[in-house]
Length: 221
Image (cartoon, rainbow, N blue to C red; front, side):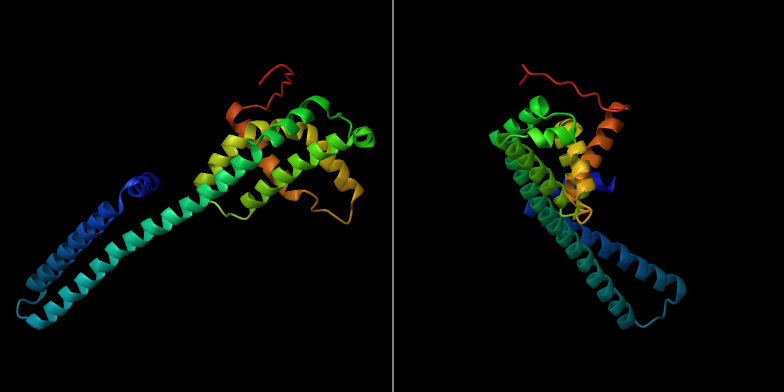
């Protein structure tokens, strides 16, 4: 419910947010003032009037703070969304560019299943494709691990990239595992890419309710 309400607030214009904050402040002030007056009437009708005015002033100040807090919250939420959108666009530019798409297609179609044999026979072109995709996944995985985007934006990114990340990792995962085994001094070798792949595979498994089935098509878009 709170996420739905915040989504509505984020879609409002600045003028509507200011008006909403003013109305909220007025409502809170009226409720508090009425409560103070009622409490005075019930408990001590002869209480000092100036004391009651002081209470009303405090109620008004609190009401203004509530309205101001709403505006600050809306601004902070907008700033977080703006940062998330910037990261999302950066991810799109990296992963949806022609070079990255071509590199993933090469991996789907040409990378051998056996890492040891594959690395021994890997051409310069193939090595460039593999490093490009791994570096792209590692970049995105690093951003996800650092919590630099909101949880909603992170979930949206995982939904978007999970089909091709999970598919590509079927080929690349064994290569990363093989390299880690050969590099005991580098246990964090492409660790962010591995984290991204785990997140995407888990999402696909939850979505499909079974382990993702990978189909390789040479004549598809």
